[in-house]
Length: 337
Image (cartoon, one colour):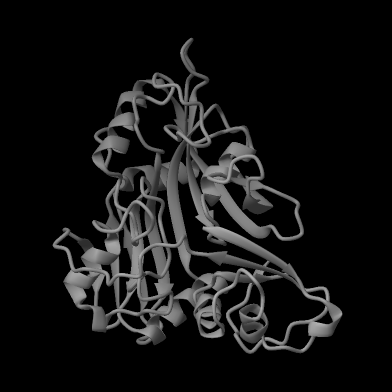
Protein backbone atom coordinates (compact mmCIF):
# COMPACT_ATOMS: atom_id res chain seq x y z
CA UNK A 1 0.00 0.00 0.00
CA UNK A 2 1.13 3.56 -0.76
CA UNK A 3 0.49 6.15 1.95
CA UNK A 4 -0.54 9.75 1.25
CA UNK A 5 -0.68 12.26 4.09
CA UNK A 6 -2.38 15.63 3.69
CA UNK A 7 -2.81 18.56 6.07
CA UNK A 8 -5.90 20.61 5.16
CA UNK A 9 -5.11 24.29 4.57
CA UNK A 10 -7.37 27.13 5.72
CA UNK A 11 -8.53 27.96 2.18
CA UNK A 12 -9.76 24.37 1.59
CA UNK A 13 -12.06 24.16 4.61
CA UNK A 14 -15.63 23.16 3.80
CA UNK A 15 -14.91 21.05 0.73
CA UNK A 16 -16.38 17.56 0.49
CA UNK A 17 -13.83 14.91 1.35
CA UNK A 18 -14.01 13.08 -2.00
CA UNK A 19 -13.73 16.33 -3.97
CA UNK A 20 -10.88 17.58 -1.80
CA UNK A 21 -8.89 14.37 -2.22
CA UNK A 22 -9.58 14.20 -5.96
CA UNK A 23 -8.02 17.65 -6.39
CA UNK A 24 -4.78 16.67 -4.63
CA UNK A 25 -1.68 15.52 -6.45
CA UNK A 26 -1.03 11.83 -5.95
CA UNK A 27 -4.69 10.97 -5.39
CA UNK A 28 -6.88 9.34 -8.06
CA UNK A 29 -10.09 10.80 -9.49
CA UNK A 30 -12.92 12.03 -7.31
CA UNK A 31 -15.02 8.92 -8.00
CA UNK A 32 -12.07 6.66 -7.22
CA UNK A 33 -11.49 8.58 -3.99
CA UNK A 34 -15.16 8.04 -3.11
CA UNK A 35 -14.61 4.27 -3.47
CA UNK A 36 -11.51 4.49 -1.27
CA UNK A 37 -13.49 6.35 1.40
CA UNK A 38 -16.34 3.82 1.34
CA UNK A 39 -13.77 1.01 1.48
CA UNK A 40 -12.25 2.34 4.71
CA UNK A 41 -8.96 3.45 3.16
CA UNK A 42 -9.18 7.07 4.33
CA UNK A 43 -8.55 8.34 7.87
CA UNK A 44 -9.26 11.81 9.21
CA UNK A 45 -7.35 12.70 12.36
CA UNK A 46 -6.48 9.05 12.95
CA UNK A 47 -10.02 7.69 12.62
CA UNK A 48 -11.49 5.91 9.60
CA UNK A 49 -13.95 8.15 7.75
CA UNK A 50 -16.59 6.41 5.62
CA UNK A 51 -18.50 9.53 4.55
CA UNK A 52 -17.47 11.01 1.22
CA UNK A 53 -19.64 14.04 2.10
CA UNK A 54 -17.59 14.91 5.17
CA UNK A 55 -16.68 18.61 5.05
CA UNK A 56 -12.95 18.95 5.66
CA UNK A 57 -11.77 21.45 8.24
CA UNK A 58 -8.60 23.48 8.44
CA UNK A 59 -5.94 21.47 10.25
CA UNK A 60 -7.50 18.08 9.51
CA UNK A 61 -4.85 15.39 9.07
CA UNK A 62 -5.95 13.06 6.27
CA UNK A 63 -4.27 9.74 5.45
CA UNK A 64 -5.05 7.70 2.35
CA UNK A 65 -4.01 4.08 1.72
CA UNK A 66 -3.67 3.65 -2.03
CA UNK A 67 -3.55 0.12 -3.43
CA UNK A 68 -0.36 -0.85 -5.20
CA UNK A 69 -0.69 -0.22 -8.96
CA UNK A 70 -1.24 -3.23 -11.16
CA UNK A 71 -2.75 -3.97 -14.52
CA UNK A 72 -6.49 -3.23 -14.43
CA UNK A 73 -7.45 -6.65 -15.74
CA UNK A 74 -10.61 -8.46 -14.74
CA UNK A 75 -10.41 -10.86 -11.82
CA UNK A 76 -10.52 -14.20 -13.59
CA UNK A 77 -12.55 -17.03 -12.00
CA UNK A 78 -10.27 -19.78 -10.70
CA UNK A 79 -11.33 -23.10 -9.18
CA UNK A 80 -9.45 -22.65 -5.91
CA UNK A 81 -11.06 -24.64 -3.06
CA UNK A 82 -12.87 -22.57 -0.43
CA UNK A 83 -13.34 -23.82 3.13
CA UNK A 84 -16.76 -22.24 3.75
CA UNK A 85 -18.10 -22.25 7.31
CA UNK A 86 -21.27 -20.19 6.76
CA UNK A 87 -23.03 -18.93 3.64
CA UNK A 88 -26.33 -17.31 2.76
CA UNK A 89 -27.61 -14.93 0.07
CA UNK A 90 -25.65 -12.01 1.53
CA UNK A 91 -22.32 -13.12 2.91
CA UNK A 92 -19.77 -15.89 3.38
CA UNK A 93 -17.61 -16.83 6.36
CA UNK A 94 -14.63 -18.88 5.22
CA UNK A 95 -11.36 -20.21 6.57
CA UNK A 96 -8.41 -18.95 4.53
CA UNK A 97 -5.47 -21.29 4.18
CA UNK A 98 -1.90 -20.12 4.67
CA UNK A 99 -0.16 -18.86 1.53
CA UNK A 100 -3.32 -17.50 -0.09
CA UNK A 101 -3.23 -13.80 -1.02
CA UNK A 102 -6.57 -12.03 -0.55
CA UNK A 103 -6.73 -10.09 -3.83
CA UNK A 104 -4.65 -9.41 -6.95
CA UNK A 105 -1.65 -7.14 -6.45
CA UNK A 106 1.80 -6.69 -7.90
CA UNK A 107 3.39 -10.13 -8.12
CA UNK A 108 0.09 -11.89 -7.38
CA UNK A 109 -2.16 -11.28 -10.38
CA UNK A 110 -3.91 -14.65 -10.03
CA UNK A 111 -4.39 -17.49 -7.59
CA UNK A 112 -5.94 -15.22 -4.96
CA UNK A 113 -8.97 -15.46 -2.71
CA UNK A 114 -10.72 -12.93 -4.96
CA UNK A 115 -10.26 -15.26 -7.95
CA UNK A 116 -11.76 -18.10 -5.92
CA UNK A 117 -14.74 -15.97 -4.83
CA UNK A 118 -15.48 -14.94 -8.43
CA UNK A 119 -15.47 -18.62 -9.44
CA UNK A 120 -17.75 -19.56 -6.54
CA UNK A 121 -20.24 -16.66 -6.68
CA UNK A 122 -19.81 -14.93 -10.05
CA UNK A 123 -18.54 -11.36 -10.32
CA UNK A 124 -22.10 -9.98 -10.41
CA UNK A 125 -22.86 -11.53 -7.02
CA UNK A 126 -20.03 -9.95 -5.03
CA UNK A 127 -19.67 -6.53 -3.46
CA UNK A 128 -17.23 -4.19 -5.20
CA UNK A 129 -17.12 -1.28 -2.76
CA UNK A 130 -13.37 -1.80 -2.36
CA UNK A 131 -12.86 -1.88 -6.12
CA UNK A 132 -13.40 -4.23 -9.05
CA UNK A 133 -10.11 -5.97 -8.22
CA UNK A 134 -11.26 -6.85 -4.69
CA UNK A 135 -14.68 -8.45 -5.22
CA UNK A 136 -16.35 -9.52 -2.02
CA UNK A 137 -13.42 -8.62 0.23
CA UNK A 138 -14.56 -7.12 3.56
CA UNK A 139 -11.28 -7.32 5.46
CA UNK A 140 -7.94 -8.97 4.81
CA UNK A 141 -5.59 -11.46 6.36
CA UNK A 142 -1.88 -11.49 5.59
CA UNK A 143 -0.85 -14.13 3.06
CA UNK A 144 0.61 -16.44 5.71
CA UNK A 145 -2.05 -15.79 8.34
CA UNK A 146 -4.75 -18.45 8.32
CA UNK A 147 -8.30 -18.57 9.59
CA UNK A 148 -11.72 -17.00 9.45
CA UNK A 149 -12.65 -14.01 7.33
CA UNK A 150 -15.74 -12.57 5.65
CA UNK A 151 -16.82 -11.93 2.07
CA UNK A 152 -19.89 -9.97 0.95
CA UNK A 153 -22.17 -10.74 -2.00
CA UNK A 154 -23.40 -7.19 -2.63
CA UNK A 155 -22.33 -3.60 -2.03
CA UNK A 156 -24.85 -2.88 0.74
CA UNK A 157 -23.76 -5.90 2.76
CA UNK A 158 -20.11 -5.07 2.17
CA UNK A 159 -20.63 -1.52 3.47
CA UNK A 160 -22.61 -2.77 6.46
CA UNK A 161 -19.93 -5.31 7.44
CA UNK A 162 -17.20 -2.71 7.09
CA UNK A 163 -19.26 -0.42 9.30
CA UNK A 164 -19.29 -3.14 11.97
CA UNK A 165 -15.49 -3.08 11.84
CA UNK A 166 -15.41 0.72 12.00
CA UNK A 167 -17.75 0.81 15.01
CA UNK A 168 -15.81 -2.02 16.67
CA UNK A 169 -18.80 -4.35 16.92
CA UNK A 170 -17.31 -7.06 14.70
CA UNK A 171 -15.65 -9.47 17.15
CA UNK A 172 -12.38 -10.92 15.78
CA UNK A 173 -10.19 -13.22 17.89
CA UNK A 174 -6.78 -14.56 16.91
CA UNK A 175 -4.48 -17.18 18.39
CA UNK A 176 -0.75 -16.49 18.36
CA UNK A 177 2.32 -18.04 19.95
CA UNK A 178 4.96 -15.50 20.93
CA UNK A 179 8.54 -15.66 22.13
CA UNK A 180 9.23 -15.32 25.85
CA UNK A 181 6.92 -15.16 28.84
CA UNK A 182 4.34 -12.38 28.99
CA UNK A 183 4.17 -11.52 32.69
CA UNK A 184 0.58 -10.30 32.93
CA UNK A 185 -2.37 -12.56 32.15
CA UNK A 186 -4.17 -9.90 30.11
CA UNK A 187 -3.60 -6.43 28.78
CA UNK A 188 -4.36 -3.75 26.19
CA UNK A 189 -1.99 -2.30 23.60
CA UNK A 190 -3.19 1.08 22.31
CA UNK A 191 -0.77 2.84 19.95
CA UNK A 192 -0.53 4.54 16.62
CA UNK A 193 0.66 2.42 13.68
CA UNK A 194 2.20 3.82 10.51
CA UNK A 195 4.47 2.60 7.75
CA UNK A 196 8.05 2.29 8.92
CA UNK A 197 10.33 5.14 7.85
CA UNK A 198 13.27 2.70 7.73
CA UNK A 199 11.70 -0.16 5.78
CA UNK A 200 8.62 0.54 3.66
CA UNK A 201 7.61 -3.13 3.74
CA UNK A 202 7.14 -2.93 7.49
CA UNK A 203 4.66 -1.18 9.73
CA UNK A 204 5.74 0.30 13.06
CA UNK A 205 4.35 1.76 16.27
CA UNK A 206 4.41 5.52 15.79
CA UNK A 207 3.39 8.75 17.50
CA UNK A 208 3.31 10.55 14.16
CA UNK A 209 0.15 12.70 13.85
CA UNK A 210 -0.79 10.72 10.73
CA UNK A 211 -0.45 7.32 12.44
CA UNK A 212 -3.69 5.35 12.66
CA UNK A 213 -4.95 4.28 16.07
CA UNK A 214 -4.57 0.57 16.71
CA UNK A 215 -6.05 -1.26 19.71
CA UNK A 216 -5.34 -4.89 20.59
CA UNK A 217 -6.35 -6.62 23.81
CA UNK A 218 -4.83 -9.95 24.73
CA UNK A 219 -5.30 -12.84 27.14
CA UNK A 220 -2.55 -15.29 28.02
CA UNK A 221 -3.73 -18.89 27.56
CA UNK A 222 -0.64 -20.95 28.40
CA UNK A 223 3.09 -20.53 29.03
CA UNK A 224 5.88 -22.92 28.03
CA UNK A 225 9.25 -23.33 29.74
CA UNK A 226 12.48 -22.04 28.20
CA UNK A 227 15.51 -24.06 27.09
CA UNK A 228 19.06 -23.11 26.17
CA UNK A 229 17.82 -22.69 22.59
CA UNK A 230 14.88 -20.34 23.28
CA UNK A 231 13.32 -17.99 25.83
CA UNK A 232 10.16 -20.03 26.30
CA UNK A 233 6.81 -19.20 24.76
CA UNK A 234 3.40 -17.75 25.56
CA UNK A 235 0.17 -18.78 23.84
CA UNK A 236 -2.12 -15.77 23.51
CA UNK A 237 -5.60 -14.89 22.29
CA UNK A 238 -5.70 -11.41 20.72
CA UNK A 239 -8.86 -9.37 20.21
CA UNK A 240 -8.73 -6.76 17.44
CA UNK A 241 -10.68 -3.56 18.00
CA UNK A 242 -9.11 -2.02 14.90
CA UNK A 243 -7.73 -3.66 11.77
CA UNK A 244 -4.43 -2.06 10.83
CA UNK A 245 -1.92 -3.74 8.54
CA UNK A 246 0.16 -6.30 10.50
CA UNK A 247 -1.46 -5.00 13.70
CA UNK A 248 -1.00 -8.04 15.97
CA UNK A 249 2.48 -8.74 14.64
CA UNK A 250 3.56 -5.13 15.21
CA UNK A 251 1.97 -4.93 18.66
CA UNK A 252 3.53 -8.18 19.84
CA UNK A 253 6.92 -6.98 18.64
CA UNK A 254 6.29 -3.67 20.42
CA UNK A 255 5.97 -5.43 23.79
CA UNK A 256 9.11 -7.49 23.01
CA UNK A 257 7.23 -10.74 22.39
CA UNK A 258 7.34 -11.24 18.62
CA UNK A 259 5.15 -13.89 17.00
CA UNK A 260 6.91 -17.21 16.50
CA UNK A 261 7.85 -17.77 12.86
CA UNK A 262 7.44 -14.12 11.87
CA UNK A 263 10.15 -13.46 9.28
CA UNK A 264 9.37 -9.73 9.14
CA UNK A 265 9.15 -8.75 12.81
CA UNK A 266 10.54 -11.80 14.62
CA UNK A 267 13.78 -13.54 15.58
CA UNK A 268 14.38 -15.38 12.27
CA UNK A 269 15.89 -18.28 14.19
CA UNK A 270 14.65 -21.60 12.80
CA UNK A 271 15.16 -23.49 16.07
CA UNK A 272 13.52 -20.82 18.24
CA UNK A 273 10.74 -20.57 15.66
CA UNK A 274 10.04 -24.30 16.11
CA UNK A 275 10.69 -24.91 12.42
CA UNK A 276 7.74 -22.77 11.30
CA UNK A 277 8.06 -21.10 7.91
CA UNK A 278 5.25 -18.62 8.57
CA UNK A 279 4.00 -16.58 11.51
CA UNK A 280 2.04 -18.44 14.19
CA UNK A 281 -1.14 -16.41 13.76
CA UNK A 282 -4.63 -17.78 13.18
CA UNK A 283 -8.03 -16.08 13.07
CA UNK A 284 -9.91 -18.58 15.21
CA UNK A 285 -13.23 -16.87 16.04
CA UNK A 286 -15.54 -14.27 14.51
CA UNK A 287 -18.87 -13.09 15.87
CA UNK A 288 -21.19 -10.39 14.56
CA UNK A 289 -24.80 -9.38 14.02
CA UNK A 290 -25.94 -10.24 10.51
CA UNK A 291 -26.51 -6.88 8.78
CA UNK A 292 -29.66 -8.08 6.99
CA UNK A 293 -31.34 -10.72 9.17
CA UNK A 294 -30.15 -9.49 12.56
CA UNK A 295 -29.10 -13.04 13.46
CA UNK A 296 -26.07 -13.46 15.71
CA UNK A 297 -23.42 -15.28 13.67
CA UNK A 298 -20.49 -16.95 15.43
CA UNK A 299 -17.92 -19.23 13.83
CA UNK A 300 -14.84 -20.92 15.30
CA UNK A 301 -11.91 -22.51 13.54
CA UNK A 302 -9.45 -25.03 14.97
CA UNK A 303 -5.75 -24.49 14.42
CA UNK A 304 -4.37 -25.84 11.12
CA UNK A 305 -2.03 -28.81 11.30
CA UNK A 306 1.27 -26.88 11.22
CA UNK A 307 0.36 -24.66 14.17
CA UNK A 308 -1.28 -27.46 16.14
CA UNK A 309 1.85 -29.60 15.69
CA UNK A 310 3.99 -26.90 17.32
CA UNK A 311 1.77 -26.81 20.40
CA UNK A 312 1.64 -30.60 20.59
CA UNK A 313 5.45 -30.64 20.57
CA UNK A 314 5.58 -27.98 23.29
CA UNK A 315 3.00 -29.69 25.52
CA UNK A 316 5.61 -31.38 27.80
CA UNK A 317 7.06 -27.93 28.54
CA UNK A 318 3.77 -26.41 29.67
CA UNK A 319 3.95 -24.27 32.81
CA UNK A 320 0.18 -24.37 33.12
CA UNK A 321 -2.84 -22.69 31.63
CA UNK A 322 -4.72 -19.64 32.77
CA UNK A 323 -8.49 -19.67 33.33
CA UNK A 324 -8.90 -18.30 29.80
CA UNK A 325 -6.65 -21.08 28.51
CA UNK A 326 -8.74 -23.75 30.24
CA UNK A 327 -11.74 -22.44 28.30
CA UNK A 328 -10.17 -21.78 24.89
CA UNK A 329 -7.34 -24.28 24.31
CA UNK A 330 -9.63 -27.35 24.27
CA UNK A 331 -11.45 -25.74 21.31
CA UNK A 332 -8.29 -25.49 19.18
CA UNK A 333 -8.09 -29.10 18.01
CA UNK A 334 -4.89 -30.19 19.77
CA UNK A 335 -4.00 -33.82 20.44
CA UNK A 336 -3.45 -33.13 24.13
CA UNK A 337 -6.01 -30.42 24.82
